[in-house]
Image 1 (cartoon, helix red, strand yellow):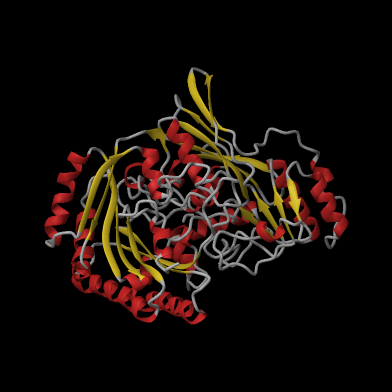
Image 2 (cartoon, rainbow, N blue to C red):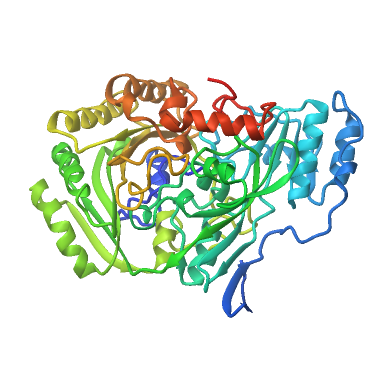
Amino acid sequence: MTESNSPPFRHDSFEKSSSHSRRSFLRRTLGVGAIAGAAVAGAVYLEDRHSTTSTTTTRPLSTATTTSGPATAAAWAQLGASLTGSLVLPSNPRYGIDRLLYNSKFVNLHPRAIAYCATPDDVARCIDFATSHEVSIAARSGGHSYGGYSNSDGLVIDVSRMASIGVDTAANIARVGAGAKLIDVYNVIGNANKLLPGGSCPSVGIAGLALGGGIGVFGRKYGLTTDNIRSVTIVTADARTVTADERTNSDLLWACQGGGGGNFGVATSFEFNVHPMPQVTLFTLQYPWAAASTMLSAWGNWIGTAPDELWSNCQLLSQGTYGFLPQIAGVYCGTPNELVSVLAPLKSMIGTAPTYSFSGSNSYLSAMEIEAGCSGLSIAACHLTTQNPAGRLSREAYSAKSSYVNAPLDDTAAAAFVSAVENLHAHATTVGGGLAFDSYGGAINRVASDATAFVHRDKLACIQATYSWSSETSPSVIAAGAQWLAFLGANVFDATTGAYQNYIDPTLANWQSAYYGSNLDKLVTIKNKYDADNLFSFAQSIPRTL
């Protein structure tokens, strides 16, 4: 989710109702493209051209603004006329929809304009305009920032029209526009018989997900999304379009590998390493609530010694009026028969027979559709209704908090997490929510903590707590969910383990250290180099000073 970035629960539970992602499942317990092939240097190159790309001609940057001072109506009109894309002002009939983010709790954000940028030059014009007229800006790819930071009271620079996706199958490289949605990335790359590790939310923009980390079901085998960035094209605060890779602007590449979205510039495209398609097996094990504490403790001991081919999460869920659901789910790069021996030690440690058990092979794309809550839907339908005429997905309201687990939990710690979910159920019975422990290890943890900006390389699992609600949920119940998150942060989570920057949390104290740890000083140095005037600034952006 992410995520930036992707919304709360980014991995599917692979539960009985496979048409719902874990995130959607929790929130709904409230009761409530074309592919073309061509030969390029002897390689097969697949590209998705369903979205506007940056192939049109551009106007000189100097036409973006000719005056300084407050932005007048004439200045906004001049900016709109200069763009290859389009500018949506409050007077536009689409403004009411276009200003909204994915999380429907952010309904009171009213930017002065939304620029749908079709080219990097469009982005540069917007940055030049914002600088000249002292207008605040926010970068937006999919609009999934947990803190609502992909909106602003000034100018929103939306990159969703830069969404082309291409795969060089010989070089194992994907070239992806920063506005591409994750389901489209999976579709195009999957049809090239390749894999890019990433999250689950189908409508999340690739930029926010990749810049902040990118936890996904193939992370233990192939690393985070951010670990697979080869290069990023980004428009910096001085309106320059630069490429950051290992040879050029390598410090900026480092910062973009986990330093979070919207901190150093506006990303417009990426090159990623992609991997050969593995065989994929999904599994789910559900247990009685009485076994939840034992299940969680056993899972931690088991996942720490599991092979890289296995990714798993452990979930303790309150299903609103439907009660509780403890379950373990996962994805294995291998056959169902191979998975049997991998799961055997876990089942033995839990000791209680599961109430539900599933294991079955699946294609990569089908697995990611299940992961996205889109099983049985077309790729076009697996978008927001406002993103695609055929889209069938809707916005959702939720709040979340994250933490980490460094080592397997003892019985006392496991019982505290179980008790915390019971606490949520007792005080907000109609709210769906709970805890999800997403496994790290493998390829994620073999990267040195200072090799990229993503510092969390010694973790057993990331914990995500979330609760969600509908338009019919009372304010008092929503407030009870918020109090539950605060209770977790103060009494259950270990603040010394850090937090995941893609699950950005406006209520988190000491967030700079929690997100970036020992890498914070270097990020501040890079911030000063590329954004000395702090143009890219929001409540939890990388600071210029400590």
